[in-house]
Length: 82
Image (cartoon, rainbow, N blue to C red; front, side, top):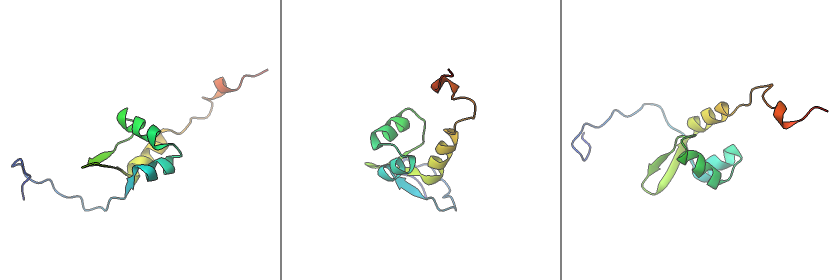
């Protein structure tokens, strides 16, 4: 099979992909859809556009969550010591 531009069709992955809508991904992250769109635009999280629909892979969202993990000892600037 070939693409419309004449190039060969890439092999289809054998794994099933769990897709999330932008509202579902935003809810999973605990943020607003507007913030999610900003994260997508800034390249913090990967998204895919299918026509007018934007979808995110659940695994990509989970990786983003892990990348946002706070390292212990890095928050001292937020609470001053008397």
